[in-house]
Amino acid sequence: MISIGIIEDNHFQLNNYREFLEDFQECKVVFACRSMEEFRTLPHRAPDVNAILLDISLPGESGINGMEDIRRIYPDAKIIVLSGHDGKEYVIESIMKGASGYIIKTSRLMEIYHSIVDTINQGGTLSPRAAHLLIDHVSKDPLENVKDKLTRREYELLQLLKEGYTYKEMAEKLYVTVFTVNQHLKKVYQKLNVASKSELISKIWSNSLH
Image (cartoon, rainbow, N blue to C red; front, side, top):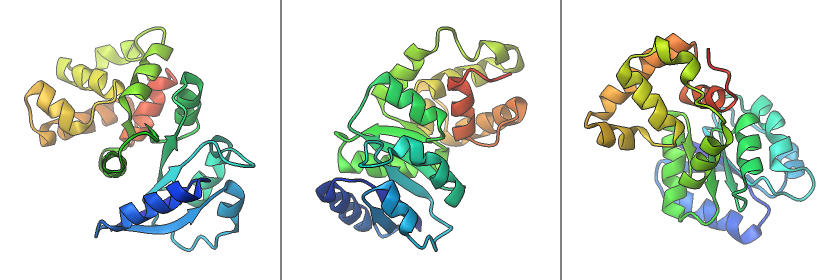
């Protein structure tokens, strides 16, 4: 079962997301609210929330500023920003504040569902636009500092991960299985002292790998 929370100020979109996601047997929307202020009034009795869809342009406190509280209340939940903004500053700040994913509201509902699944199974997801903005933000290759620690294949996988590819897409591009990709990345996590894909992505874009 995938437990999902939604914070979205547009009433129509909020209901649309909730109704669509609950059509999937494995999905359960455990809360849906329209502001950070409303979020804080909830009883928060579902510690097993897996993913939270978060609009960052909310009335009152912004979603970006509210991420710290969300992560404190649901430390194991993946925060997926679902925004109408695709400006570089929004994408970068969201990732730096701890978002595991960033997708644009113009995405089809099925793409949003797949983004939730990818984030839970693989640690993160980025829309192609968000991935390119992050790449453009980095003046030099953030993987250069750790290149000597990695095998050629591990380095190739991290380059693809940096560009926003999913495990499945990486496997297809390199003509290997998803299992093989996963095994390589587990070794990378150990070498770079990270615990998850989301932590790795965060360190890539903050240029703090060593």
